[in-house]
Amino acid sequence: MPASPTILSLIIMATVPAAKAEAPARNQVQAVKIGTASPLSGPGAHQGKDIENGARMAIDDLNAKGIVIGGKKVKWVLQPEDDASDPKTGAAVAQKLVDAHVAGVVGHLNSGTTVPASKIYHDAGIPQISPATTTPQYTNQRFNTAFRVVASDQLVGKTLANYSVTTLKAKKIAVIDDRTAFGQGLADEFNRSVRAGKAAKIVSRQFTNDKATDFTAILTQIRGQDPDVIFYGGMDAVAGPMLKQMKALGLRAKLVSGDGICSEKLPQLAGDALGDDRVICVVAGGVTGAEEARYNAFVERYRQRYKMPLQTYAPYAYDSVMVLAAAMQQAGSAQPATYLPALARVQYQGITGNIAFDPKGDLKNAALTMYTYRQGKKVKLQVLR
Image 1 (tube, one colour):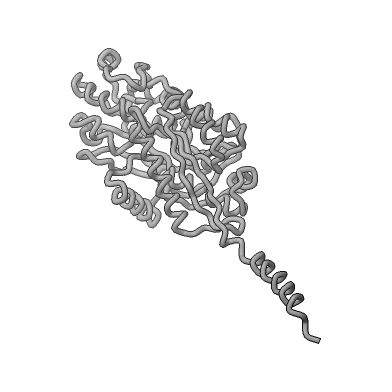
Image 2 (image 1 turned 60 degrees about the vertical axis):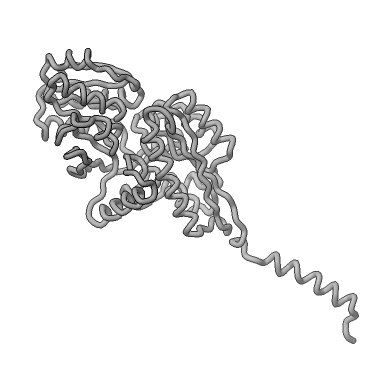
């Protein structure tokens, strides 16, 4: 006997929702928010904006790929925040990102803001990758949420000390730092390595601050020691005016420093005091061959998009976002507690080289690239491992 219309209607009503329920979860969209924290105001704003720009390029590239995590398509969202290179502001920004429920953080730029912020992220269980912080204190805290894609001051200081003595043949070296966590920490490591080698002598140790513009007194004292090299621990906003005053005082020494001054803006800040082969600086990471072509393509893409040259940290911020995304994909989740173990063991080939972390969160087998400036342009010298 055929089913009655009432019974048939019930059968149809029962089966239609079931068919919808079986639709693939990948048709659903989940928003995954990544925070960036860096100075977007003040003397370091050009470096901080570089971090935001690099991260934004990664976010856009991820959205273009249509990535699926845990069966759901992801809409990647960037939340940039300004820490003004100030530790208190950095802590407030960190709490703001925690309250916004970001899945991960790329930042900060300065060691002095990164370290206090790192505890806030750790307490909230949110992974943090710094694209710039070099102080050993950052990872010595042993927070399982703290990572970096640049070398620590210990490696940078040792490398620059060795280069100053063996390549530049320096016998007398003066050291200046800006008293920030980054600048002082890097200068201390450089100073320690020079003294340990005993091939050169530290003839002067001077201090300034990260907002100073007049270095006449300390440079006059240094000039009396006639050093071959002046090492500066700090950022380009101070190094530029310092180079001008070195020239005015007739100081012939080369200026050696870390990634803080190794920017595209240094020629503008130093003017004709920059000279050729007078400044030696180093940045973390190092690529050669086909990898170098890929890096250069990124630099050009950045220039075309933002109508300005890449400064220093954009590739590291880009890689940081991509590493967070890779860990989420491997874990099948954007929940920090779930993907954090995958982040700790991630293997990722980035713009800046191969990225993997040791148990402290430091970059394994970190490479360094030495640069100088010629005719107002940053010129690559060599990659060191």
